[in-house]
Length: 324
Ligand code: ADE
Ligand code: ZN
Image (cartoon, rainbow, N blue to C red):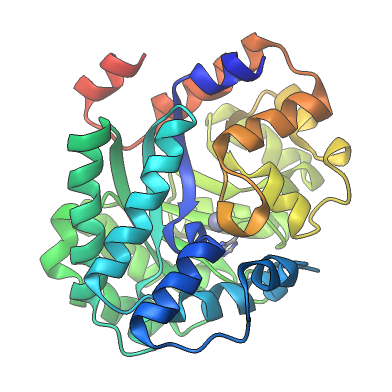
């Protein structure tokens, strides 16, 4: 089964590129850029990744990215991830990027976008790995800051496939970002949003109605609202589920308790993703393997889930045909 899951062509629709920063690269970039870290070793970094909830993770995630300073750093970050993903049978990666987290520390948008842009072109050329980019807004920061970012990103609109919404969910409902998502729609950008990870099912509903998203990132709490589940099923709304993330952030206590089998049973359109692989103990293959261990799914289930991701991906039709 491991060989089958490794060879299965996988598209990853929910990944934060800053969440691919492995401790080894974090240490190397800290050294290269003269940034001091509150850790003495790679082991100490890994030992700190003992999260109690989303916020406890976000605190370390934002701290970790302090080592990313130059375009080369962003290029190295993304290329390192693309190589690892490629080795696991990933053929397409859609990365969220959090520009506000970099702007706030004095790193220019051009630095981030140029570094990631170089890595994307290399991935295509060197690995035959297609990529897409989702510019995410931090929902725990003001909505007008998101709007300013979207306008500031004008030179990069062409390189964006979608806008997204991430960071601390509770107390930051999607509707706060209606205006900036409307603007993104007017620019012809697709929209996705994290909802129903830690937040209530109402946030999923709001993401659908106020933000007009084409995918829900996470969405696992939809099961608390049967009417919502019915709507998600009818609309074949894609949920980008991240099993190991949910386990490590204590959305579930044990993988065996994960709602994935119930979501599947409800007829929802699901995909499997890694979210922040460097922080949650595994990439795409590990997430697939964790589901196999916990739920005993057959090859057919994994073929379906991997197929859903190819169908829902932001990619040219010619590429989709090639991957089908
Ligand atoms: N940013 C990075 N990972 C995230 C997650 N799992 N939820 C919300 N925001 C994030
Ligand atoms: Zn996420």
